[in-house]
Amino acid sequence: RRRGGFDEARRGLANLGKRDVVVRTNTVLTTLNAHQLPEIVETVRHIAPTRMEFWYYLPMEDYADERGLLPTMEVLIPPLKAAIGRAKAYGFGVAVKYVPQCLRGDPASVVATTPPASSHVPHFRAAHPP
Image: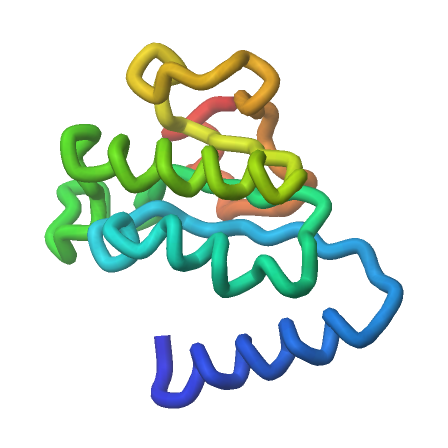
């Protein structure tokens, strides 16, 4: 996070909306944004992403969560369900990673448990296998 970063991202999203591109969003679920998940869907609605991904925060170094970024399921589930509902109502694909389906109560088609095609520091994958 840095000053002006969100406005910069919004301008970038607006530019994408003017182009013929495929857009996927990836929102990391933390205590900082859990309450804003439905609004995040509204923020990107105009660019009609093909898929919105919601990933539960997995700390790479802050294993004890000293920064307090890990939301409890009690806090996370209501806004996450609302965001999933909105995204699906708009016709967006939805993937939720590292949040138990039994707590979300949504169809299995929303679940995505495969790791991304990206690289992580080696100890991360060992500590958090897919």
